[in-house]
Length: 181
Image 1: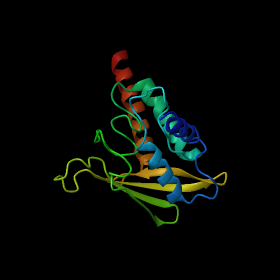
Image 2: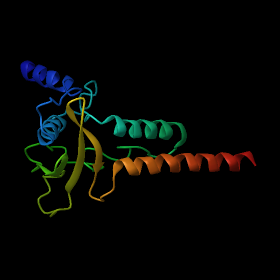
Image 3: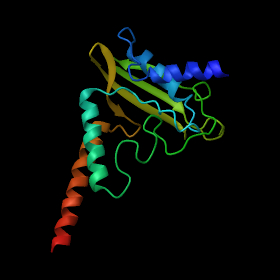
């Protein structure tokens, strides 16, 4: 038990530089989801696995996060109202890599599609809990990183976050102007 925990802990800490130069985009995303779906939420001291983002996407996320924190009084930002890696607000308590039925495929160079069932214990739900997440990846410093994410609604997260940032600022400025009258 102790040995298994140490191995998982070592694997988790390697997430920051998880992608090796030799990894393909599919290998990188597969490694991430294997780790992510084995994460123990009951141990809050363990850092939650995160996917490596490109400088460009990371900048958009950071700016959005800062503006949301400063100006928004509602759920705002990437993953604020759901799990950004599962495209869901709630998931099966027993969800694992194995029972999710996950498939990961490269649909064009650097574009990886993930399909998985986030509630495998509910057998009669049809495709209701089937999630499709597409990762657009680029090579940065010799390793594959995520440059954008597209969910089932076919919207670019980069674009959604950029628009949300502008909207948060607009609403803040509008409210400030009203209060100053």
